[in-house]
Amino acid sequence: MRIGIDIDNTIVNTRESVFKYKRKSKFKKYKGYYLDWPKEAQEEFLMTYVEQIHLNATVKEYAKDAIDQLKKMGNEIVLITYRNNNFSNQSEKNTIQYLQQHHIYYDEILFGAFDKGRICQEKKIDLLIDDSLVNIESAVKAGIKVLVYPMFYNKNTSYPRADNWKEVVKYIQNFDQ
Image (cartoon, rainbow, N blue to C red; front, side, top):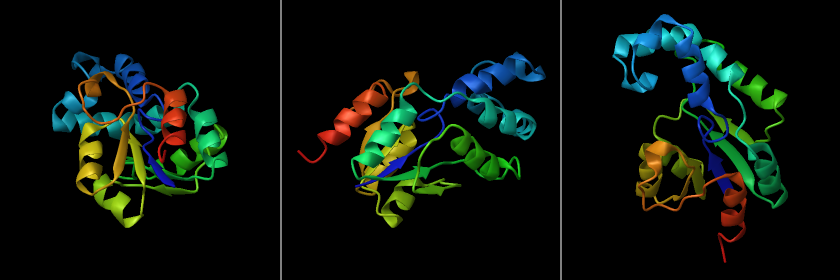
C-alpha cells in the first residue's frame, strides 16, 4: 500500500514550535495561531521564523517507530507536505535535513502540496494520514481513503481517526481485513 503522510502537526509538532517563536517576537500581540492573523503578519512571521520553526519542531511521540513499522509491513511511505520554498529558499533542504537527523524514513517526499487530493490521485496514494480536514476532504473527494491524525481542530469529524501513532499502525494492520 502507498501511504501518504503529512509532516506538519502529523509527524512533527509544528504548532508548538510556531507558538514558541511567536512568544519570543513582536508577533505575540496576535491571538491564536498564525493562520488566524492578518495576511501581512502571517507572511512576515513566516519569512522571519519558518526555518527555525521547521528545524526545531519536535517529532510526535512514536511517529518515527510507527513509520518504521509501516515500512517493515511492506508499505511505501510518501510524505506529502504543503512546505515549499516560498518563505525560505532553504525550506525543502532543511526539511530533508531534519528528516535525516531524526531518522524519519520515507520513499518519496512531495513539496508544495496545495491540493492533496489531486496529488494523492496522481501519485496513486491508497491512504492519506493528515491533521487538516481541508486536506482530508480533498482526498476523500478524489476517492482516496483517509485517516485523521488528531488535533483539537479536527475532533468533530466522521472520518476515520487515530488518536496517536500506535493507533495509526493498528488501523493500517486492519486496513484490508
